[in-house]
Amino acid sequence: MAFVNIGFGLSSGSISTQKSTSKTCPVRMAWTGAGSASALDSAEGSKLVVSIAGQKVLLKKLDGQVYAVSNKCSHLGLPLEGKILKASYDDSCVTCAAHGTSFDIKTGEVKGDWCPKLPSFLANIKKPAPLPTFPCRVVDGAIEVDI
Image (cartoon, rainbow, N blue to C red):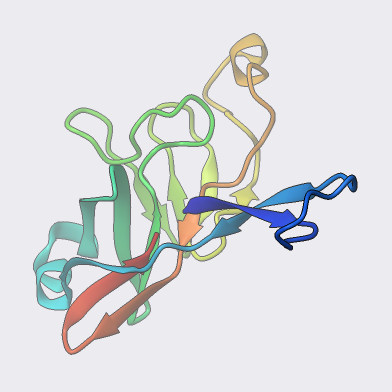
């Protein structure tokens, strides 16, 4: 996601004494190719991690629909799917192997307890936060993510 600074004020050729205000608004960049639907179908567990615009994105097929979420857990930024850590999946949730928080893969919403595997002083380093999600679609067998 990019951020665009939008200025509000007079835009005439003369100098104005009025103060211009501005607002920063998030703007989606564009649909970006993230691989093929057939590769996702043949991947173990129907999941893949891809790099898009400098971010690691976890693609997961669930009930015939493809979903895209950040591969970085919202607690400490550890990978959900990595060389050592492997997330678990149950119903529509992805669960972080490092600390046990479950996230709804469709909405990113925290499900259940925050960091149940960690002592409270570590769990409370950061308040519960949803997992970032990204719009995703399949066009002519190609997966595209709006990031």
